[in-house]
Length: 198
Ligand code: IMP
Image (cartoon, rainbow, N blue to C red):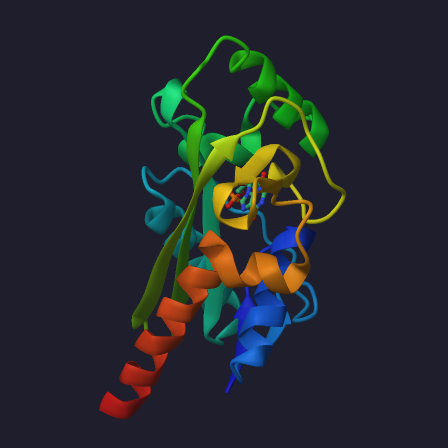
């Protein structure tokens, strides 16, 4: 069965396609399916927002739709930016503007602990919901480094990878340790259970 990826975020689409294809799940982006959907992400949790996006795409296309809602939670900022990560600092900013703002807001913070969070939700045409959740723990660096990945990757340090930033590791390494990689793995397990039960 074909699944639609309900996202317009290029970085996410590349990662989700790679991980899901490796796991034998055939996916196309909503744009490839002829849909240009921007829904308001007004949920209170990552899972709520992922559900809102997947449900909208599935309803319009009549296909199973998978969505990831993700973000960065920083200890010294009380868990912010959290579900507001994509819009941190307001409209019209680049990824770089946003992570530089975060670094500025962390200037005097000694506690650098942070985590990336991902909720992956799939809505079936009959309304059934299958989901997965993943976290990746690390720390906010003092300056950006690396060229890979997207979003806040250049300022997210990974103690488990010798202190490299998420931008300095390969795509394969990132998928193996990332919040999204873990959430999709969990989702795939749930999907297998779902198919074995129907
Ligand atoms: P949303 O899920 O569309 O609300 O967007 C989540 C935002 O979190 C993205 O726009 C990125 O800025 C950030 N983000 C999510 N996952 C990652 C990641 O793997 N690396 C860097 N930034 C990420």
